[in-house]
Length: 332
Image (cartoon, rainbow, N blue to C red):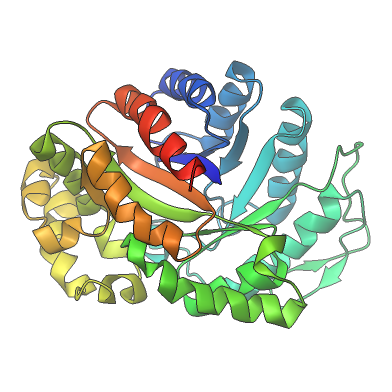
C-alpha cells in the first residue's frame, strides 16, 4: 500500500514544511500540493518542502498547461527533481474551467491539450527533442532542455471526466482521480482500464491514487464543520459525474457559490452545506475513516491519498492517520 497527503495551496509556506516533516515521520510516501489560482505558488511551496524533507516524494496536484506554459512546466519539473534528488512527481491536468474563466481563459481542447503537454514533457525530461505539430502544441526542432536532466519525471494525471480518466491508463505513470465520494472508485476504474487496454498495460503498471477528502478529529461536529468549509468553496466546480454519485447537481451548489464567491460570506456558505454534500468526503474519528475506507480497499485500491481539509488540527490529523489508518491498511 502507498499512502499520500494532499493539500491545497492556501496555507503559509512554513506550515507545509512542518506538515511534510510530520508526514515523513508518520510513514507517508508522498506529499502533494495543489496550485489553485490566486492562492500561494505551489512552485515555491514544493521547493520549500524539498528543503525540509529527505525521503518523502513531493508532487503537484495539479499544474495545468493553460496558465503555465508546457515548456516552463518541464523546466520546473526537471529542476525540482534535480534539487530533491529524484523525488518530484508532476501532477498535470486541465484545471477547473470555472476558475480559468476568472482570467478570461477558455478551456479549449482540454483532453488534447493535457495529452500533448504530457507527451512533450515526457520527452523534455528524458533529454529528448520535443518537436511536435499537434492540435494544441506546435513546436519547432529547437524544443529541448538546455541542461542535463536527472531522469524522465513521472507524470500523474488529475482526472474527473471519463475521457481524461482513460488517459491515465493510456499514458500516465500514475493517476490522481478525485473520488467524491470514496465509493466512486468503482465508477472511475472502468474508464482507466479502457486506457490501460488501449496501451497494452495493466493496473500494476501505474500508481493509481484513490484521492479522497477527509476531516479527522475526536469532535464530530468540528470535523464536519472543517470539511463543510472546503466543500462550500469547491463544490460548484465539481464535475456532474462526481456530484451525480450523491444525487446532487451543480445547481444545488449555486446558492453556496454565490454566498462565498460573490457575497464573501464564508460562514453562510459553510452553513448551507447539507449532510448529503458532506458525503463528498469523510468527517469524523479515525474509526469512522477506517470503516468507510474498508470498502475502498476491498475494491482493489492500493494507494490511498488523504486530502484537505484533514481536520481542525492538521498536525494532529497527520499523526492520527500515521498511528491508526496507515498501520491498519498496511496489514490488509
